[in-house]
Length: 231
Ligand SMILES: C[S@@+](CC[C@H](N)C(=O)[O-])C[C@H]1O[C@@H](n2cnc3c(N)ncnc32)[C@H](O)[C@@H]1O
Image (cartoon, rainbow, N blue to C red):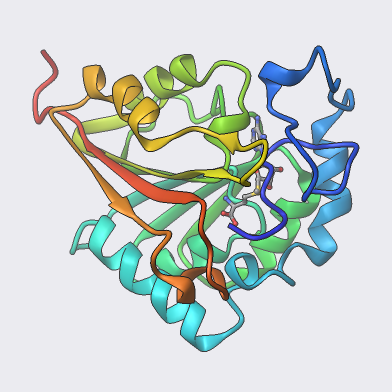
């Protein structure tokens, strides 16, 4: 993750300590997170791992996605999709994309980025995606879950949006050294395991190409496959 790590707004620069909801008493969030992300949308893609403008960074994420997503065309729901950089990679791999973000400006950028592709974008809350009865093969979420008010509830909701045998792809981390923010892989695994038939964690810190630089904090993808039939 770049220096623009938080999935929730901070009054401080993003290199500053936490803006995790658990810290709200210490550091109250601005009332309207969408306004924060609307303001960030214009420059969001400047970070190498956001815009994926560098061919090497883009290729590194494309290779990871290829390993995480089904080999055939799949219905992928990208929650907190931001400007749609990962969604575009997934669409380029033949998948049908639904992207959702609560920031209208992020969504406008994502729509422009995926113009002409099999992709739909919605403005809404990732914790309660307004997708009706639709079910997906994959729910993909990068750098969003950790800052939601109730991650366990969001995970249960997302698992319910998957078709039997579907897959959660959660790209998360624990950023910073002195006062880290985020969810450690072990903690997220413990939250996801009761929902899944199988989980594994892919370590992402040791691949500097993904981030456009060397990183030393914890970054990972947690892949969780749901039971083929619900218990
Ligand atoms: C750090 S950015 C990550 C964007 C994208 N997933 C990526 O990896 O490039 C966090 C995104 O999550 C969105 N977001 C934060 N909280 C959200 C919520 N409750 N519902 C929907 N989107 C949310 C923000 O608007 C922002 O676009």
